[in-house]
Image 1 (cartoon, rainbow, N blue to C red):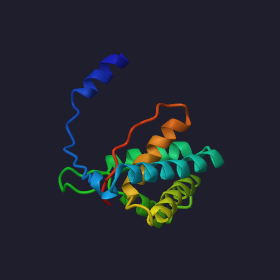
Image 2 (image 1 turned 45 degrees about the vertical axis):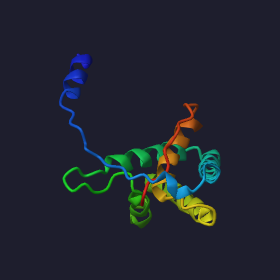
Image 3 (image 1 turned 60 degrees about the horizontal axis):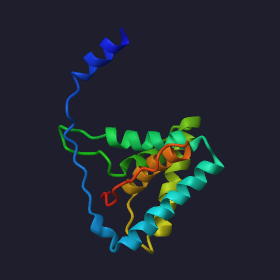
Length: 149
């Protein structure tokens, strides 16, 4: 029964037509890019070690950011806006408190890296999702950086 439901639901899936603007050259040389990515991933790892409840939060944030794309307007998608929406939210539920903690980690990491590189909030969200998967024993995912906010 479940196989039939699953396959029938897959046949109705339409392409999103999402567009992600990447500018890998914005980081300059490869050494600077790798240093920025490693620094941000380390900040995310530290936050997950201090509060393991953040692992699914980073993952959710990355997924929600990608799913926010609006094909009619061509707007939203992986552009970092989710972080600001979370930080501006008036919701004080436990879930949103965790989302805000993760968002603050990304913003603070970006600020500390600002001196070295032009890492974006959107890259931080993508790297947060990747770090969450790695923190629970998943594979080390290669993330293309250079998203624009």
